[in-house]
Image 1 (cartoon, rainbow, N blue to C red):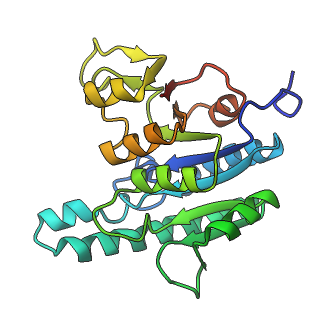
Image 2: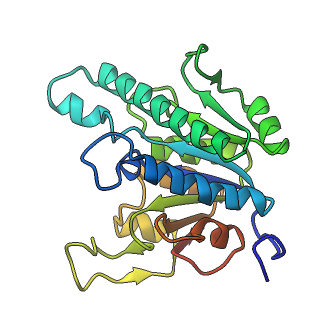
Image 3: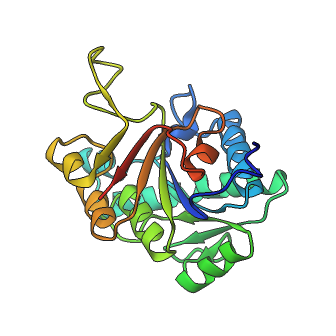
Length: 242
């Protein structure tokens, strides 16, 4: 059974990409081959009939918290980080359009010459018309991470599933790169994530998902077909639910 013919468990999904994920093996910036691979995965999702939204971070360019630690005003640093997410979102939009998809970047801060303002009803309409919506600039507020923005947007657009794309194949009891005895979980609930301080996302994002019963699947973005498998409800990565 192909992805196109298999029954979808989740019709509308939001994918959370970290800015660092776009670097590939580079130390900073955007690796074109990585963005291209992500574009292929998103196209496969769309071809399977899934409505797709994306939230992308900006850590490959600027990290607000890191800049603040270096002495820059925290609000200013976070605003710089928001602009970095817009750069990444435009790169993703361009890649998707070159693959024949229709994509819209919607920003939480006004930057009208390069993208649309985020308006919830318009975002939902884009999704209903089969366009990929890339949400940029986080929540538009300092002190909130793009993980929190992803949780918020997933809830606002009534997504059926949030996918967190990482470089590991799920949630572990410890960093598997540092601890060879780290155990991978197939499934967790949000209370367990908070109690064990597993670092899936920040606490604000986790609580938002828990209180709004938003399922989260953490998958390895380098595994071909992981996004489609998640949308089909297959056992890939780690599923976090209430």
